[in-house]
Length: 318
Image (cartoon, one colour):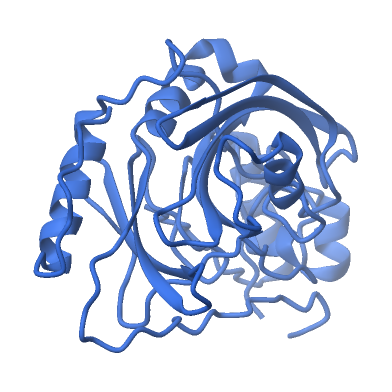
C-alpha cells in the first residue's frame, strides 16, 4: 500500500531514507503538481461561447475594476504540513502531520462549494497570463438552469484533482482562491443581501475551510458594494490537524449575481495572517479584483450539470 508523504526539510528526507533501509519497504511519494475590469460589451444570442470566454479572459487579465479604492483580502486552503508524525506513521502507515496531503484527508469528504461545471467543459488556466476560465451551471430565476462564465486571473497554479472544483493555490504557502456558489438569494439584489448570507455559505460545516472543524474568531473588517459586486474583507481561524491549534487567516470575498440567476457566485481569496503583509495581500487583492461572473449566451447545445466526483478517503482502506 502506497502512502503519500510530504517532506519539508532535509532532516525529514534523511529520516525517510533511514526508515526505508530499516524496514526494507518502499513507500510511494506523491508529487502534487497542482498546477480591472473593462466594460463588458452586451452579449447577443449570436455571440459564440468561445468569443465570450475569450473576452472574459481579456477582461480578467486587464484588471481594471476598482471597487471602493485599493483592493483587499482573499481565500486560502488548509494549513500546509510542516512536520511528520513518525510514531503514527510507523504504527499505521499514515502520516498525521496535517496539511492537504491525501494522508491528511483520510476519512474526509470533498468540500461542498456549490459549483457545478457544465457537462463537457473543463476548468482552464493560461500559464502565461494566469487567466482562469470555467463555465458553470446555476439555477435561474425562471426555475430553469442556466450557464455562467466565470473568470479571474491568478498567480497560483490551478489545483487539479477530485478534491477541487475551481481553485488555484500555492502548495508551499497555502495562499489561493476558489469559486463558490451560494443558495437561493430569494430575489434580492446584491446590495440588499446581508453579509451573513455569504459567510454562512462560505463557513458552513461542509465548506472549504471546515476540513477539521468550522472556522472560529470570524470578523468582518470591511464591506462595500459597487456595480453589482459585493466585496467583504474578513479574518478567521482554521483548525490545524497537526497541532490542534487555530491558524489565523485573512481573506477577501467578492460576490455577484449574474443576470437571470437565483444564486450568487463568489470568489474567495485568502492567506495565513502571518504572510498577509509580506506580499500575499496584494496577490489576493489583484486576484479578487479580476473576478467576473456573467450569464452565458443561450445556445442550442444541451445544458447539463457535470457529474461531481464525491471524493472521500477511508483511512482504514488498503
